[in-house]
Image 1 (cartoon, helix red, strand yellow):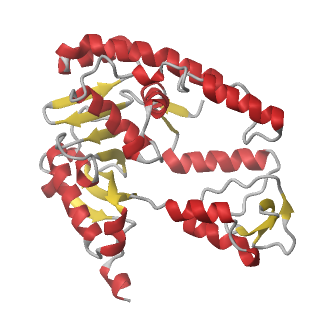
Image 2: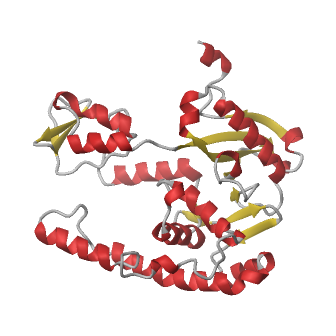
Image 3: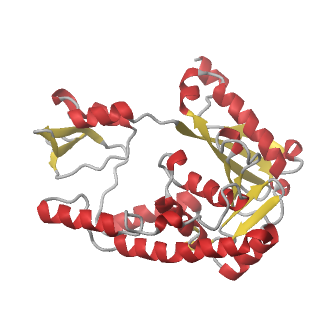
Amino acid sequence: RKLQPLDPSYQVVLPRVRLDVTRDHARYMEEIAREFPEAVRGVEAFYARMAPLNAALDAFLGDDLPLPPDGFFERRRFQRASVQNPFGPYGDGAGLWSDIAEDHPFRLTVQAQVRCASWADPDALGPLQVVRLHAAWRNHGAMPEGGLTGLRAFLRERIALHAGEIDLDDGAAEIVLRRGRAIAVRRRRDEEPTGCQYVVAGLEIERLLTLFGERGVPEALAETAAECRPRYRRFTCNLVVRSEVIPVGMARHVFFVPEPGFPPIEDNLLLVEVGTLDEERSVICARAFALSDRVTSDPRYLEDLERRIVGRLEWLFPFLERHLLRVSSPWILPEPLRDG
């Protein structure tokens, strides 16, 4: 009830292409026929395959499988489901793109959105990620009232209503191990740990490794951590502009690929989100994949990337320069703070 549907769900912009992606299939196919008349049948076949695959994936994920599986019977049940799902060795998920030429721009309109929607390696996304993330964005595009701030307020209200407590200043200080397995977590404000069977951590690997105290990092986790190094960082920059520079008909979310012949990274794949700041001003938030090794090795890399992104946005927003009020990024400190 709190969600406000987005129409269109999002837009994809390529050179000489602007595609409105909507949940209304007939209207969406009219868009496809306008932009890609030679590929209408192939696109119809793509979505005809995707719909039952997504439904089968819903059934698989809704089957109340134990995660993680514990014990012989649970592991056997989970392994059987893993093999028999539509993306296992006996499924038909691999044929998703069979009617779309490899170099056709429609593939890029889907892949650009999926790359930005996933937190997995964007260069190694398989058909499962394509089906799940594309179906979710296309069919369920919505925003909560008040945006992210409104969502946080709503969650706080629900937690308090059910006698829950919120303490954002608290956090995990130590993961307690026994025979290489996690058995408890000690919070910063507690002297005694709280017992558990499993730990789910949404932390960067470097931060996670600091939580194992004197017993040291489990060998298996240490080996995995040595291999897990991010290739990309999600770089964000924000532009405050006069609202009249926002083109009429622009969606809230736009995926922009300026040069399809080059890798979709850095300023060549932007997720652009447009929001209202007040009666006269708007905010353009642009997100890009920054190269992780350049972030750590080149102190001017992010400033250069920010300049290139602003230059690309001038393609989307005519007369941007005269309406641009401020550019900032949480990745780049202002000069006084940087020097201090």
